[in-house]
Length: 199
Image (tube, rainbow, N blue to C red; front, side, top):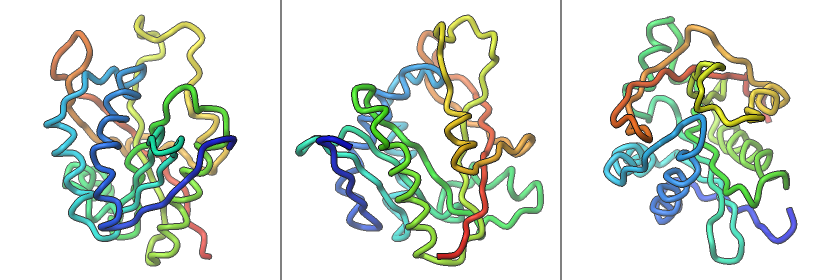
């Protein structure tokens, strides 16, 4: 991965990186498909669950002392109730799921294998904690014909499928965030899951 290095911080050790993760989220998610108009108050609320959970994890990419990428994970049961609702509605056990919050990486550092390192680190953390049958994340649903979609944009679906994740139609949550040019908007996000094999 050239001049970048990966560090994994769990529980309380991760908390000192909350501001770095918030800043990366506001930068990376400003682009398609999230179009997030960064909001520090929203970030504080969103990351509060990670600050409160001793079982959370941050996988961080550094260039020198600078954090250039981050991925987070948390037991689904430790996350906010909004993340539980669709699982409960389908009769799924939330205690079986380790949830991946996001993978955010500055464009200049993409294509170096860091995305795989983010998944490897979080899957290993979930495996080490024990008690989880699944890992999962949620991705925003966008109309393929949305005129705001950049020409030639390639999504991450092939990468996720290559990691063994399968989109779960109907296992969808709703979240509101401030969208560029539109203010506060409600969004649908559908979960992707894969079984977590034993160590």
